[in-house]
Image (cartoon, rainbow, N blue to C red):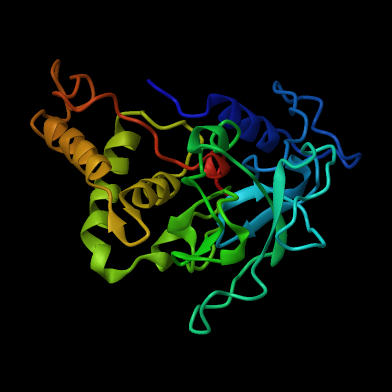
Length: 270
């Protein structure tokens, strides 16, 4: 089965395995050694996952490695976590609209990876959705910035942050998209029953990632919605048991089922 950003998945799984023995290291009995801390912009679950020791949880996107910065709208200084000029100091101190909701996050001025393409953003973090000028609810945060682009996830803007350990995503749903939410529940139920999810993934985290693929900036993405609907309808034509069942028969012209769980949410549930 195709897996998105497998390196990030391996890192998250490794960092969540093993218990602390009181010395700051992993339990010696663990079969998986933790990988080194990640660079700026990478997916994370806790501060120790990052070279900067800052895993930013906010409405900007799924938690990612960042750090505080001093001068807004200027390149962040180079460090162990990123090179010179590779990150921009983004500020949420002055939202573009007085009616915009307050920004919720561990920091309101922080470093974000600069980019030339979404593919570059996703090299270390499949949770990034866009490479664009810094925006908040669709409006540029600092119009005078010009065309300097950074990695971001617009579908998270203005929403209460979701804990990637709990995946309490339903609190962020606009009732206008209840049908899309129901579709994601059905899709992830199929993925779970047919063992298409990583065995340590909470089904709610799959639903969260699925919904954020279907609804981006209050716009329904038809391609992803149609793909998962095709998978559900195809497999619904087969019984649960028997030589030809819903989990053994390949989908008809739907493509391979893909786990939509955000990398930061993959791993054991709390």
